[in-house]
Image (tube, rainbow, N blue to C red; front, side, top):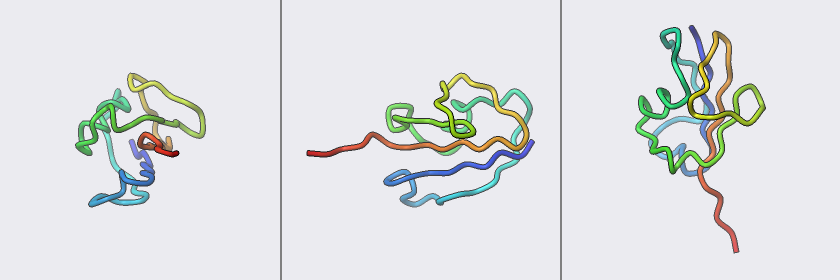
Length: 74
């Protein structure tokens, strides 16, 4: 299945902005983080097709996963 991954802010460093990947069926968001070497604590907000998603969520063909790091501010 094909899944589009969008990375934001510091997660883009040495990676990419948006890229389409081919994954096996039953792939979860956690599996994607592992493949991209993104620690779970560095994925503060994850959206699946524009809605908040849990890391255990299984993906389907055509899904769009957006991953945001923790946001700092002052």
